[in-house]
Image (cartoon, rainbow, N blue to C red):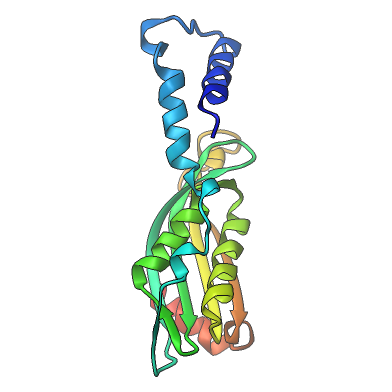
Length: 183
């Protein structure tokens, strides 16, 4: 990331909204925002597959589900946060990833400006690509501040997206089992 460009952009934004960039409370704001961007957009500089490379051999092929993975992301249309819970499941084909690796994968993809629909498919595709499972299902529930603090102003409304791969696409019973488990 180009910290200097971010700082200059913040100064221009502050001037554009009518603020005095030399006011005491704003003097260090451009640098703070640049450091914040390194953190909240850090997923742009990470390989989303990296955490799924460490795998373990298993004999069973029962569903693995990691639910209620808290994430924070940024809407690419308004650069406002959206946040919520991701629920990730897969049916192994001889290999599993460590449970924390599922949460880390969600985190990498969430730390990019994007839309929720893309985030959901990125996670599902990463699991499919790296674990070669029999099936994958990802459900994300999120509140978008671009809908709650501006625009239509409907706090508490949630957007739910879903991606299915393999046996989850074909088997309604598997989808229902997943949905029952995340409730």
